[in-house]
Image 1: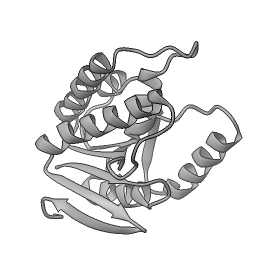
Image 2 (image 1 turned 45 degrees about the vertical axis):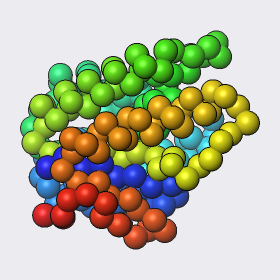
Image 3 (image 1 turned 180 degrees about the horizontal axis):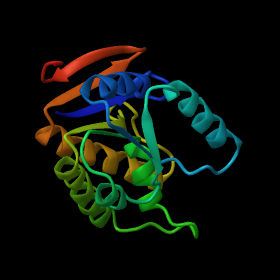
Image 4 (image 1 turned 60 degrees about the vertical axis):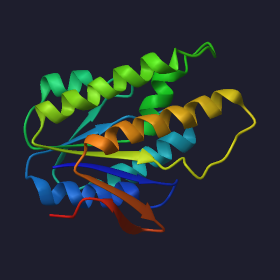
Length: 177
């Protein structure tokens, strides 16, 4: 099964995705995409590690690419948390410049397809950005559009799409097995 789990910040999407992954396979790989830069990021990473403690995940830190993970680990379930960080890491360079959004979209779409070939089950966590509206910074708008486009590409090929709202999973596509 391939599942996309979307939701706003603090919606409970990660916890839901972790529970889903534990139902799919005893062999569990967790791909963490957040860079540990700053206190807030470190706190969020620590919170997520504690949340999945004891669930049997092998954690792989991959803030820049999913390709290496699918080349080194195969089978079972892979949970990627989350695509928003991965997109930001690929789109924004340390010097403040931006990559070509279309190239980032194509690369990440191909990497997601690679995961689907390498693992029996894929669970992707992503940001729900459709209700965000416009932002003051054009670069943030590019990020929002890119996340939205990637979510749409993934949703068309994945079996299930679930939006988590206030901790409640709302099935958008497919049926839970």
